[in-house]
Length: 177
Image (cartoon, rainbow, N blue to C red):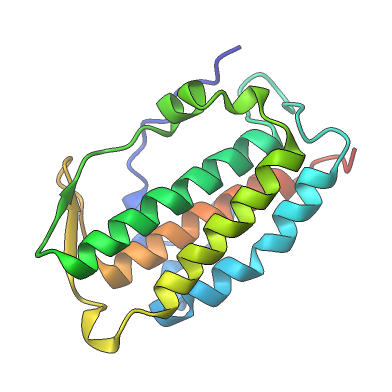
């Protein structure tokens, strides 16, 4: 069963708090993003340890395992984009469809025990990459092909919202299973 596509432009989270998860990008210093990403890891360990980690709570919502696959893939994608922003002048990167990635990556068929080690490795690697950004590089630009523009600073905080929001997705009103 396919989940309805999410084609919202989430860049607004850089300018106002998310009414769902409560994340407020204006309260986060980009230099703290690495540590904040690591703070999210226990949420994923707990969510993927549940007996119902592969169960969708309803027909329009991913299971914790599917969300974990998404966060894992986002970590890899953003590590690549961060590298480009730090080594190229104003790189443009193609839009990425999380919905297409979920289908192509068969997120619904994945097993929590297989997903967790990769998620932890990839999220830690991304956190380490953000930790290594030099002060002079936080304002380096990059852009998506849809016209959304970022600096390394705004890119870091935008990414952090994605991870925090999906941590909220797997913890809000969910039975421990």
